[in-house]
Image (cartoon, rainbow, N blue to C red; front, side, top):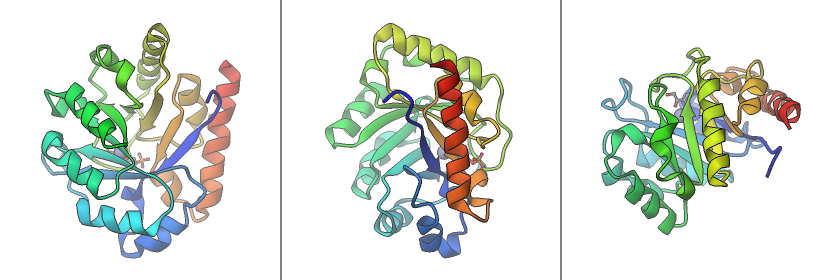
Length: 225
Ligand code: DX5
Ligand code: ZN
């Protein structure tokens, strides 16, 4: 719906020893963003299927799984079985993006393709009609707490033009370096799902951090509406 902004805190920045409490602290968000890194596609290793099952059991929020792995074709079904509600795989990691999107949707989950900063949105032109969401990486994937890449704004506007031309309106998620300080800029350029790791889990009051980002994001939408 036009004007709606969704907030997806990334548990990458949570205190893993207190995961249950950390998940309870973000109950006012819209998704739990769950970053899977394999040490190959990105130079970092995080968590996989078992922790996803534990996360799913500990929250009522839908789980937005971001697969930063080299073999999404082999692993996607396992993540669906473990409780993923929305799955983003990287365009750069598979030769079969169309097939993977079909598989995710057949299983009743939402399908999304993630793009690294150096991958142009035009790569999605042949499949944009089929996507529930596009994830535009606004940092190079691998770590929380990095600086937002400014040229992402141009990329978001290009994506919005492409969606308009196709008459489709998938969700547009931004991930990396997002906070209340730049939320209006990214929503003004077309984003409507904002991932925030350090900006949420680095704050002592998570509900306030979430509502600050949401309010800033909404102000960007009304500016351009
Ligand atoms: C980075 C991950 C992000 C990360 C964002 O590769 O995909 O989801 O947790 O963290 P912040 O919001 O701190 O940049
Ligand atoms: Zn992510």
